[in-house]
Length: 170
Image: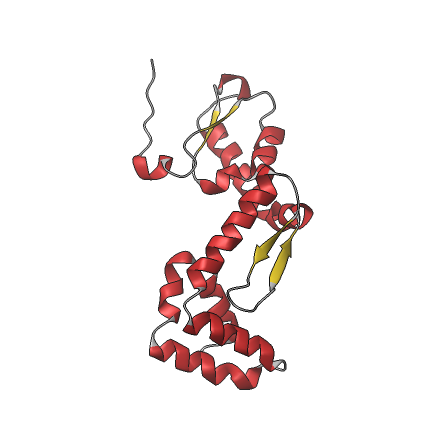
C-alpha cells in the first residue's frame, strides 16, 4: 500500500501523473481513506484521480508560478475542477522563500563552473537562460546578485532545450 505522500509526490511530477490513474493505483488511493481525519480531503483526492485532473492541476500550478514571477504579484491556483470554488493562494514571498535553498545551490554550482573554467566575471559575455524555470524572477535575481555586471539573456525559455543549444566562437 502507498502512503499519501507518495500520491502527492507523483502528482507534483509531470511524467508520473499518468501512473495514478490505472485501477490498481485508484484502489490504493481508496484504501488510504482511513488515514484521513478529514474525509473531505480524501474525497478531493479521489475526485481528482477518477476524473484525471492531475495534468490540469499541474498546468494551473505552472501558470500561477509564471504569473507570480512575471507580474511580481500574488496569485491563486484554480482548483475548481476538483471542488467548486477551490483555490490555493501563491505568494511572491512564499515562492521566493521556498526556492531560496535550491537557488543558492544552483548559483553555487554556476560559480563553481566559472571557477573550474578559469574565468573571471569580467570574461563572461552573458548568462544565457533557457528552460521554463529560468524565467522565475527569484532565479534571475539570484544570478544577477552573484554575477554583478554580467548581462542575463533570455533565450527561448520553452523551446530552447528541445531545439538544442549550440556554442560557437566567432
